[in-house]
Image (cartoon, rainbow, N blue to C red; front, side, top):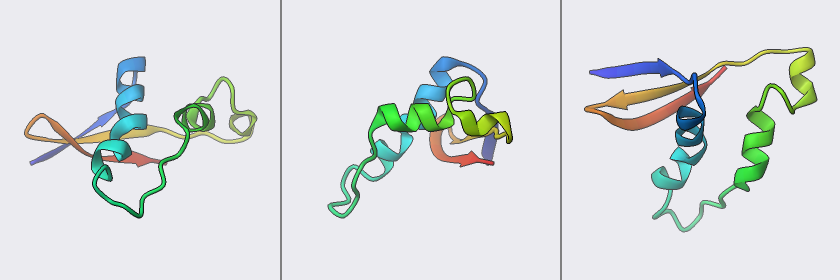
Length: 72
């Protein structure tokens, strides 16, 4: 069963940011984003877009391992 957990702390946020690197590490066509850009884009305190909008982040776990992420 897949469990969906809302990202609530820095550790979970870092896992959220780094998950695609794990998922696509063997894909020769994947171009990884800059981690600093991803962190800025999703940081509600730094990104001015969040003055007019909101977003939540979730991690999907299966058997204790991250298998996906959701932003919305």
